[in-house]
Length: 249
Length: 259
Image (cartoon, rainbow over the protein chains, first blue to last red):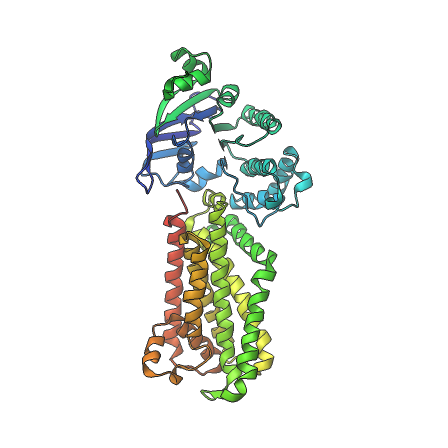
């Protein structure tokens, strides 16, 4: 899956200034090889979510180029977006829909044919233990269940690259481990994963390659082992602290 | 054909279907109250007070007001549907799931607008049909009436999309309903002919877009109106195009929608 081929995601010179003048991305360039498990780390407000949002046009970048498996994310947005699944940081489920409808309507928005959507939704409901809740309105679910519906929704159109934005924030340990298992399995099946997190042990556990983003710039990037070696660190946490620059007391 | 197929593709149809599902699912809030309110107008103004007013422009009063009353509920239904649907989706951020999908901004704007158009039509036609036996009138030009109804519903639904995006709080949405749309509808000649007004108010009425819509609907129903209907139809169509351009802009560039 890796090396030589078209990258899953290529970002070149991406800049984004918000309306209030905040420079969120200051010329970010990044390449994620197809099939990688890629971690995007950085403190709050570093630009992680802005970067993801810019790829799917939820934020409008000032300049820069983004391609998803070679498709221009802006000029060929239909093709590009079809290949991306996003599980956002904040819960954002349609309160008028049931669990099952959330998956089916999402699949419809992505143009997935009805029969295929049904089969896929069935699999995912099963996978995330949501079968009993399929007819429940999403607004009646517990936080952990909502999170599960969000993962299932991100996957129902069979994306080639999955963006997980702080997927385990506020999630109990059990769900965290089962989620880790599942995304690892997806990755082994060839899916490219881009994970943003500020749980460093999560990045340590899952990611092959890591980029550290700070103040809207990529501060360091490499495989986990290369980074540890480069910064003379024992683990990702130490790399992080050295790069971001907060000394541990 | 392929252009049409890609414009009305599965993504678009799914969002339109979602919009319809939404108002049908909450029908006790979206379909019944406007029907009831309008029937109260018909009863109070038409049946109870109508005996004293008798005729306007040679038409029995209840017949005279029915097209306007129906149009008024169509307007509020269409506007409320899209403004609240878009506002809710934005406030709770589930609109993001639509914005990041492979749909174009024009498709998103159109699906939202047509959802509201349909709700406006259901309510407006409902009021008209239920009021007909009381008014005892028939429609002179049903095709023209339907055309007007669709265009007007489309216009206010698209306007609702703009307000839904631009509004920072829900009171901005209701402000438009209570302080702009309702008064314009009431002053738009629903209950009287513009000829009955003093000259200054009559001139002011000519700047009220809803006046033209009501007048055209009345012309199509009764052949009784204050103005020539054809320029009016052109104005209504132009307003629809303008409102849709606004809805498209709102989805594409509107504040508070994308980051």
